[in-house]
Length: 213
Image: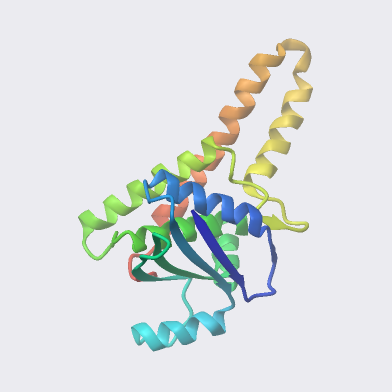
């Protein structure tokens, strides 16, 4: 797997190494060939608005655009699956509205964009349900792999990190009544539950017409 990242924005600092690991894990989970290549572009609203206008005739910014390539490099056996363009500006607004981290929002947009490259769509109700179910499955897998943190670099902590701190604080108050293993199990369940609730809220909030491949 190879993920090429072009960070064209200065809104926030991104942990591109962690994002690359997440993208590779999604591709692996989806059963894509080992020699698959993906291009990721992180940009501002102006850049994605130009692309949205040029390719979809919509003169407005959006959150994510997917451009399938489906090209094979026969000499090296590589498969270029396509480009995903994510507006970090829009991701910031959506994260604030939904009250979770920008990093988590970027993961959702990455999942959504990659599924479009795999020919998922949401024009019909049944297609929308199929896509949302798959998004939730992938998100849960990433949560189990403990990949949903450390995406942003800076003072704003991710949802998982904030939940972890709250869980640690609550645990320390009741440490005398619980053994170490039991405490860890409850902490993991709380973090997973918070992430799952955020995922469900995020998927319910997405308007089908906002992101197109």
